[in-house]
Length: 128
Image 1 (cartoon, rainbow, N blue to C red):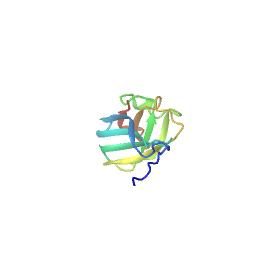
Image 2 (image 1 turned 60 degrees about the horizontal axis):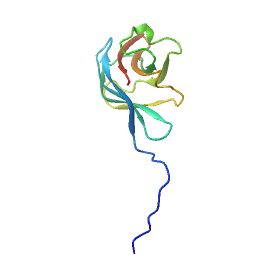
Image 3 (image 1 turned 90 degrees about the vertical axis):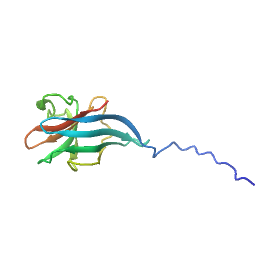
């Protein structure tokens, strides 16, 4: 006899979708690749770099910022105007960063690789 069908009523978790993405552009250093914001059906979102490449450098961090990718470097480091996602994990290749749940991505819609020591943007990507 055929098995009775069970209806699964739990919401789909684990299907990863890209919410927004953008391409890295050159700033004070060359940058290339994609920045994507991924979500798996939970509250947690991740910033993922794919085919990423920039120069190696000291003291590099990943920020989400309100400034546009083409903005003056001074616009990136303003207190309260960026979310620090932590130290850059590598200047080449795929990597993921957790985005705090309370961050509004309609405001903080630009990724910047920021050199704290010299206050320069290595590369940046506008998310859309």
